[in-house]
Structure formats: C-alpha cells, structure tokens
Image 1 (cartoon, rainbow, N blue to C red):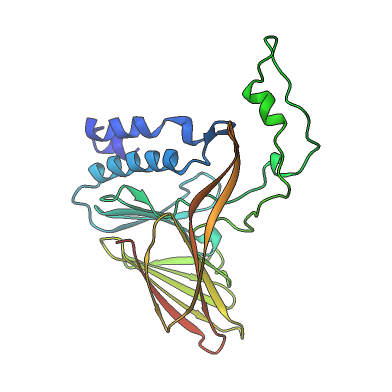
Image 2 (image 1 turned 180 degrees about the vertical axis):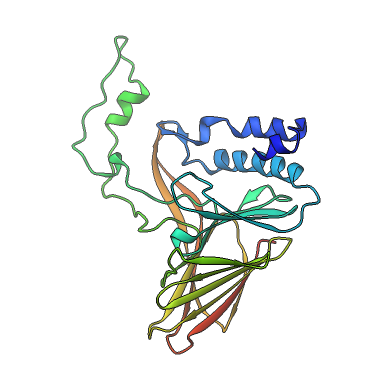
Length: 269
C-alpha cells in the first residue's frame, strides 16, 4: 500500500518482489524459517524498499492493526528506521529495522514445540524401490533423547515481568505511554531509531525486562541493573539430522523492588 501511494517506483518494487520469496516462511526437512540467513534476506529487501519509500520522511507514529489479528499495533517510522510496538504484548517492540543496516534487530525466532522434539521409538529407515533411503525415510529414523527448551512468551525487545495492558496513548509525535494495574511504561523514539524507555511500578516486587535481538544492542540502564544473558538456540530437523542454530541473544535486566522506577536507552549502532 505504501509503495502504491508513492507511485510504485521500480527501486522499491524490485526488493518487495524479492522479499516475497517463500523459503523463509515454511518449515520442513530443508530448513525454512529456522534458518536465520533466509529470514535476514527477506528483511534486508524489505528494509531497502522501505528506505526508498520513506526518503526524507520525518518521525511518524501510526496506530493500525498491522498483522490483521484484531489488535492494534503502533508503527513508528522515519527515513532511518521502522519499528512496531505491540500493546497486546505489554508494549514489547516486535520489529526494529534499521534501514542502513538492513537488519531487523527483533527477528529472534520464538522456540516452539515441534512434533519431532518428542522421543519416539526409532525405526530403521525404509527405502525406495531401488534400495536407496530417501530424505523423508531417513527423517523417520531420527529421534532426540529429550525435548529442547521452548519459550513461554513471544521473543521481542523489552518483554517485561510486569505487563502493561492494551491501554495506551500516543503523546506528541514520538512517545507512547502504556499503563497497567501496577506499571506505567513510556517509550520514546528518536528520528534515527534510538529508543528511550522508562518504567514506574507500584507493586512491591522486583522488575525485569528481557531484550532478545539478532545482533548486539547498546543498552544503557539507569539505575544500574543486574544483567544476565543467554544464547537463543533452536533445534530443527534437516536432511543431515538435527541442527542446532543460534537465533540471537536474550539479555535480561533486573531491578530490585525498592527502586520502583527504571530507565533504559537502546541504540542499534
């Protein structure tokens, strides 16, 4: 729709067409969405197209049901970046694409259970009429000793332990305010894609936020937070067996209950 409004320039239509390649959208024996380089290629082309279409654009915030799931998202964009904030997920940032990098920093695959993650009796690989085991026959004989970890929430940037509900407002042209029973979250974007986030909580409990990203993000926390990190790794079946693939890193910041407020600056460069 944006491309049509801007006259469908060829410099945008070509990368949009390339981004429609479906290799990164399915899952089977030969990879699909579990392969980061396939998803990265799609995001790279989308970034190139949007950069062309938003040339010289100032910071803008739109509220719309971006993914057609019946719940509004908040689309923040300028000539430098494009981001999606999901109020239904407590104000998590589910996309952060920096045009000059061609990277969606929030593109960390959420780990879900696959049927082949469950241990099943191992059977000998069957063969075709010529006595050669096909890839589909071979995969039937593959098993895991134990199921790999799965995620209890969708991975995104700033998944909070205290979640604001879907109540939100846009203040000015660069700030989003979300409120819950015990939490207020404010998100402010700069024209170049830096993000300043502040939280205030009233319940007597510690507070954490988790930042999952495909590449390291520069994080400045105030007050100083206890920090931990882990590699997000998936297990998927391929023609070689089971592949362990690093999807990104999850950094968790922790503040004590006595603090009651925290700030975080996120810079993708």
